[in-house]
Length: 113
Image (cartoon, helix red, strand yellow):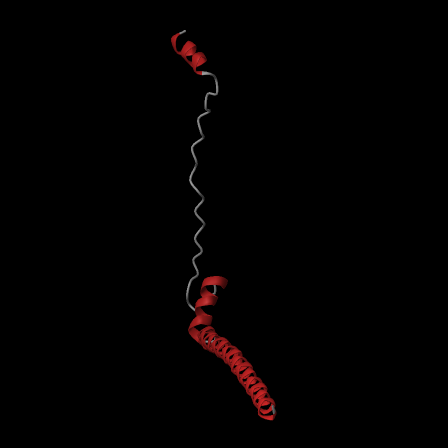
């Protein structure tokens, strides 16, 4: 009887330890997934940051500023002449012919009479 009680206690302790180990493994797996997602977001943010830095460097260059001043503000360098072309108006659109909504038999009567 005494050995049975000891065996049951060992069994209960073993099941408890196994349960705790399984819970710990599951928790570590979830935390690993969270870390992987955070690393992915960090990589995307880093890539976007690099892209924005390149764009900022390009916008800050003298060539970009000169091009924008010429295109948007119609500015020129000293001695250059700015020519502003009139905008081309859209061509005339033909007027649509009115469609006859009368019945077919009325169209036949008009045709023959």
